[in-house]
Length: 183
Image (cartoon, rainbow, N blue to C red; front, side):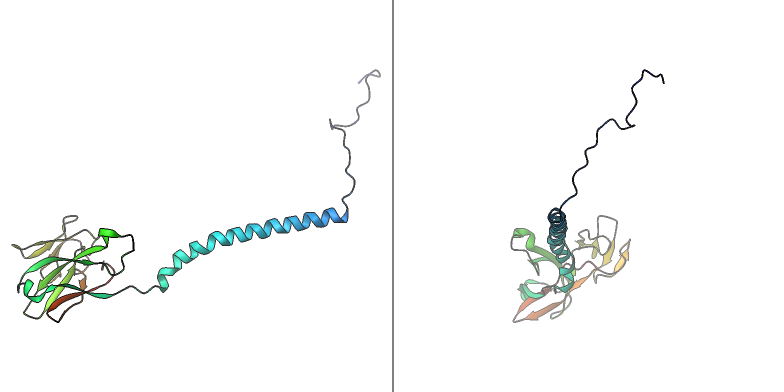
């Protein structure tokens, strides 16, 4: 440095003007606004969380609807035959429309005894088909095979076809609707 150079003030390039100290009213207002911001944030978080939590836990407290649905007159079904029958789901949504209809495989064992099987394979839920000549239920997805009584004959299904309860009442065959039995 030479003697002709002007002296440097500091390393800062800006002049600092110190603000006057905040008054007690200003500090109190800032604290109030800060607390109000936190309270509104918490209220907003709760407003978003309550419906989400309700959606998750509501099924734990809801009991599935079960109703007996008429399928047809006893005389419509021949002993030894297995047929596909349609009925309205146990708990259709008001806007479900045609998707509220579901199906089962109904087998008449004797004059008074019936069995109803789920149309869904116990492996992954694919629809099973009844093969009358082979007297077997076949799942086209992964080769699951069931005997006519619903027990596993071959393939990956872990257990027999789920069954619906069946009764005969006033000359009508009825199936008790349950949520779709998947195993």
